Length: 394
Image (cartoon, rainbow, N blue to C red; front, side, top):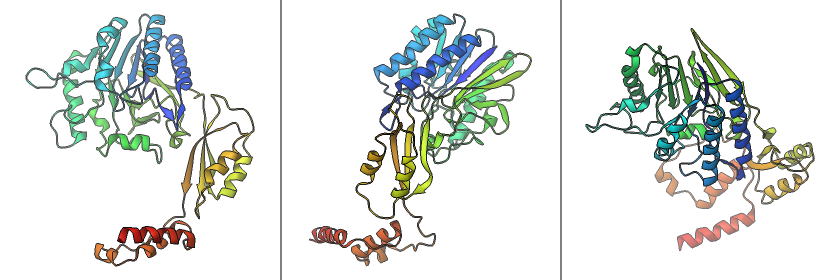
């Protein structure tokens, strides 16, 4: 059996207000080509199909058109899709009666039987070529068996589902949308870190050794987990933030015969992400770096640009100067990241009572000096702040 594992499409994402429709379309065209040329039997889509639980009509049209075209071109292809934390579980699963006629199964909701127990059978999908897929969507509180922690609950969930099929002695693959212990997150990447919301990481031991392959979604970097070669994240097909600009995008190809062969197939994302300079510089230094960028017309494949500026004093015209410098450059400004000098590590912690005795002007000036390299607040700013303080006191 040949499997193709992908995840975290985030269809509908706008990248700092830039529409990414063309990028997603190019990926889906590429994915259809891979499915056909590689003669894939099973396509696993491990969550976060959409970037929002309420995707636009255009985003949904793109998704359903892909499903129709790929199943029309590959009549024996089976597709299994699970919901991620960005998806609306119920919305994603709602068209199942129609999709099942196209050999597509979606699992977004954890159902319960009349007695209140979890319906584990709903999450076990028979495979056309024999065996089963444990299709577990992103689990929210109340979706998993009663446990002290989230991680224990997710582990108990997979163990309970596996109990339903382990005696069959047939091929088993699993799916999940979660953060596994030992996985790598892109540095300073809020798009990955904040999704779990502080919940504990899930141990790869949650997936039984007998499972031939576990297809995970949620983290945007393709990787295997804690030495488990057959427990993998496919990664996202497009970089979702500048923290992911060095990631290699792609999908996982899995061939299961007597053994399991796993190969990563890279997708060349059509729009690159560029950060300048490598380390934050003053505005003058940044403008010099912008001058080195190539000139040219803007197109839908022009790189997205992040500009990192070191701020040592207020500069109201910062954005205007950067935009003017970029007018002839073949890049699209996405983000200006402002950095200030690092604060002292031994900054004093004061009590609430001490705080009440501090003059607001002194406090504001002290913060200004720490933020802008030791310079006093300009007199004009002090005068304006003093007016505000007097208004508040009155």
